Length: 351
Image 1 (cartoon, helix red, strand yellow):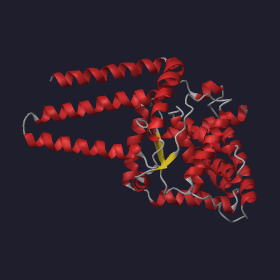
Image 2 (spheres, rainbow, N blue to C red):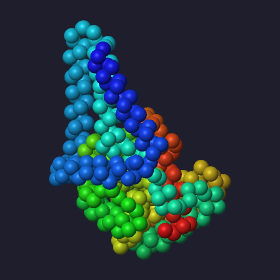
Image 3 (cartoon, rainbow, N blue to C red):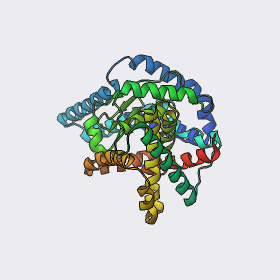
Image 4 (tube, rainbow, N blue to C red):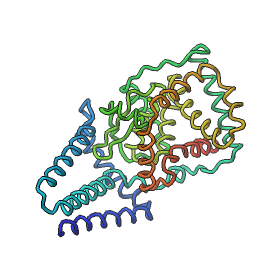
C-alpha cells in the first residue's frame, strides 16, 4: 500500500506541475523551452542520432515485453495479485506521465504560434474559398512547370534528402520564428511502418528519445511534408496544427519546384476537405478547376489511405484524438485541420 501511495503522490505532483504550466505559458516560453528542453534535446540528439535505426522503436517494444513479463510473474505468484497489478499499472502511468511531460509534453502549453506571429485564426467561408482558389491556381501552375499535364509528379522517397530540405527550410525560418533547439535529428524509417499504415499514421515523434520516424509506405509526394511535420515537433511545437503549418512552410520556399508543389498540394488537400465540410454544394466546382495531373496526385494519396482504412485505424484515431484532448489540443483529431486557420491567417497578413 505504501508503494501505491508513493506513486499516487508522484502522479498528483506531476499533474499539479502540468496545471501550473497550462495557466502560465510564459514559464514554458522563458524557462522550460530554452533551458530544460533545449539541453535535454541536445543530450538525446548526441545519444541517438548516430544510429541508422530508431532506438525509440526498439525501446517501445522492450517496455511492452517487460510489462508482459512482469504481469505474467505477478499472476504466477497468486499472492495479492490485484494489489500488485494495480501498483504496477500506477507505477507505469506515473513514470510515463512524468517523463513524457518533462521531456516534451510541456510544449503543449507554450504560447500559441498564432499569438507569437500575431496572425488571425478566425476565417469566413469567403476566406476559405479565396485561399482554396489561390492554391488551385498555384498548384496547377507548379504541376505544369514540373511535369506535362496529365502526369503525376515523380519524387523519389529519399528520407535523407527530405530531412536535409526540411532542415534548410527551418534554418531559413529562424529569423521569423523562434526554435529552442539547434540540433535537429535526422528522420528515420519507422520499424513499424506496416502497422502505422493500418493505424492511419504517416509518422510520429518519439518524446522520450527525440527521434523522428516516418511511415515509409506513404507516397513520397506526401511523405516529404510529413517529414518536415515531425521535425516541427522536435523543434518544440507539439500542436498538430502548428506542426502542419511549420512543415508546410519549411518546404514552401525551396528552390526545387517539386517540393514547392508538394507543400502547396498538402495545403490544398486540407482546404478541399474544409470546402467539402463547409461548402459541400460548391465542392465539385473547385475540384473541377484542378488539372488532371494534380487530381492524380491527390487520388494517389487518398487511395493509399482509403485502401488501408479499417477498424484498427478508426480505433487508433479515436484513441489518439482523446490523447490530444488530454494534452491541451481540445479539438482532438480536428486539431490537424486547424492548420487551415493558420494558413489563411498567414497569407492574409503576409508575415
